[in-house]
Length: 173
Image 1 (cartoon, rainbow, N blue to C red):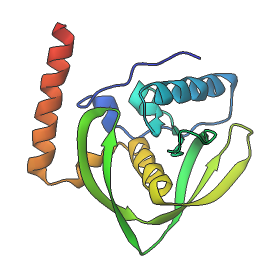
Image 2: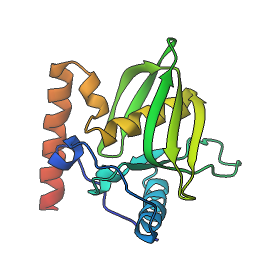
Image 3: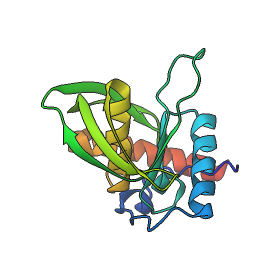
Image 4: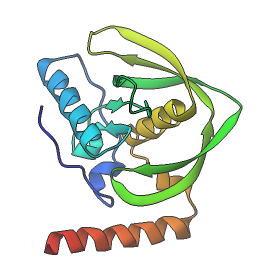
């Protein structure tokens, strides 16, 4: 497993819709393992392929917050939400590509997701709570959308300016 560099907003790759994965290959399995290692190292609860510069419809997540519990990593290839509840949930979201910035985003409280697993089989599961929020957030990445796109133009612009400064400061260091 290799830790991958996480792209920082603004980066044009974060705004591009991703291509479907044709089939599970050893390269996809390696990518998934690298993404899980990168997500846990960051640390984060989700990571989408475009965040490491790979424009493929794949993301990983593990929303198990209890440090005593076993990790519950999920790898989703070509995920699709086929149902969302009418009930909504507002959660303070963050993003590994937009470090140290958080904002309340309202999304369906529950979703049903269908995806291709690394086993080559189709899986389907309903998620609620943080798991539902995370799945929707990561699928947004695959569609070229960031959580800040749900904010007012002024808030989005303010965060983007701060991120440009952060990238400039890191480049100088």
